[in-house]
Amino acid sequence: MDVDTRLLRYFAAVAREGNLTRAAERLFVSQPALTKQIRQLESQMGVRLFTRSRAGMTLTAAGQALARQAPAVLAGWDQALREAKRAASQAAQVLRVGFLAGAANEATQQIIAAFVHRRPGWRVEMRAATWLDPTAGLASGDADVALLRLPFPGQETLRTEVLFTEPRWVALPGAHPLAARDRICFRDLWDEPFVAAPAETGWWRDWWLATDRREGHPVRIGAVTETGQPDDWLSAIANGDGVALAPESAARYYARPGITYRPVDGVSPSQVGVAWPPGADASPVIQDFVSCCLDAKPPAKPPAGPNSRRGDAVPRRRLPLASRHGRHPADGVPGSGMSVRPAARCIGPCASSGWSYSSCQFHQSYGGLCG
Image (cartoon, rainbow, N blue to C red; front, side, top):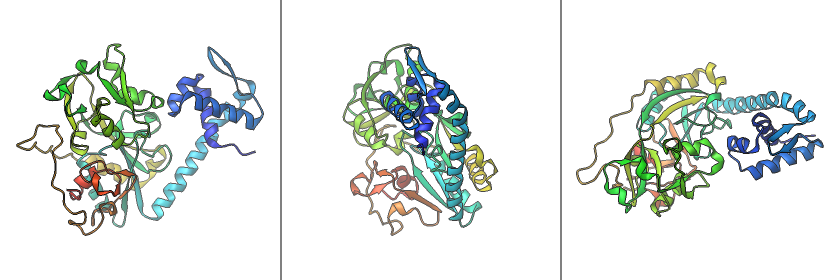
């Protein structure tokens, strides 16, 4: 009998948590969906794995036996999957770098250039992840190393190094009354509706809602971005569905007409880090990339224009897409050793072009290809 490893993974989470709600949050799935998957596993195996009660989920004798073996089975499969994918990328001399939002901001280009200089013949493939995957592909083995936001769920299973810290700002509709302020106290945002990630993302969602800074004040949810794509998040804000906390760098990488970014007092900052699986500790290639990350120093923030307020979206002059390098931006920047894997429609100044890009910050940072 063959059992889907996904079902086994769900079983292991429920067995570990002893509670469907907590397990669902850890797995980023809804509780009804998780219940259905557990019942499917029980049906396939022909045994009852849990006794259900108001107190939680208690393992039966069969469930206890499976729970003892499941972690080793899953760990072995995950390791085999990661090694197979890593071997394929190494054979092609491609380093798969997962990233969220602005990756390492302006330092990203420097990191990639330093790595390509250190490893001639290697190519860096940037893989954009949605906000529903806080590990940016590391958990699934789709990335060898990642540039992401700390803290994130699953961080305890990975190696991480903090690269820099930046404050969290708030993104508001341009016509919002609070947009007229230079700085906003978080307390003044407590009664505002927020654009949020799906509930199944658990404490990752709570952290970006700053629930720990509300002194028990309930959160108002104005919209939920089910896809985890930045353009859906931005559209919800621009349409007036709510406001949202974001890294300070979002004001540069996700500038958009109709959205204003302002500093927020009273919330903790966000950190950008590099992360990799423990099994890659012995990989010279990944360790070279980590070293390049640690050596990189983010450049000074560009000054605001003379006719703009810091945090406002500033229209930029459009240039033909092929005007700089005679090729499509998604092909990467010649000589940089970087390619951008298309994953989502561009949401920045080049959104109207109709092409599919990984995310606009790479057009702006790597050669200004979008305008």
